Length: 364
Image (cartoon, rainbow, N blue to C red; front, side, top):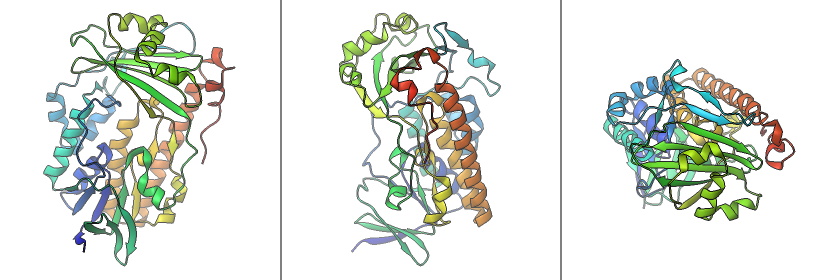
């Protein structure tokens, strides 16, 4: 028989959002994090930027000093060829919150994990098969070996939104955006510190230097565009990027690297329907809203939504939960407004399918 473990909050998912929420709650509540993976990954992870506005959140988590000592380099300027063929510069130092950072993403996630455990959160890994159910006091999660029970359940499972999906909650139809990317070996002291963004007929590119002698190069296009199969070949991927002068000048001398791909389109949980699962269920991070990478807000959203959820859970009232959901709805509306404005920008490509299909807001 499965052993039983009682907690005040069960958090499904041990990514940045889950560990941030666990850190904020654990000093005053019994928090159990449940993760399907048996161990953290050890390879490079895309999602490598954090804005300066995240500093107060890192301070609240108690990791800001450690984060600064870890040596994540400050973000340089952003250079974009987007609305026109003329490059537009935006200096990161002009941001009132500060320039932000390029991350060693794996190191950042390990820091959050250590902090959550230090705060007193429990962590169960390798829980690949979980069944969600109800009992008289709230939620139960059966992993086969352990039955976890708690009054509050939080979905922090990332873009898959596995828990919300089990509960029958509805998401927007996924935007068919595919991210092809590669981590290229780069001199650790390379002078270029800029994020470079380039629109073309079939999608958009970005490249940025990272810590530990790496540069990420990524291209975003539609999953139904056969071009992506051609670009999965590393040499052709790099050659295609070098057709753009903005990218070519920082890719000179670099050699092709192993190709990877992932879904990257906007996917939003319908906030108005969350009440159907009960006032004791919340979703945070990508499990709530998975943002298009063009926003550069995914990691920040993970930390900010965790902070908002922690406030609602600690208050323990229906009013606090409604305030949290209203806040998250406002976040979604603000994001969608900017998302549509961004994709309307390159009018010179307006006749191409990639840009045409993004003239409508993603709706539920």
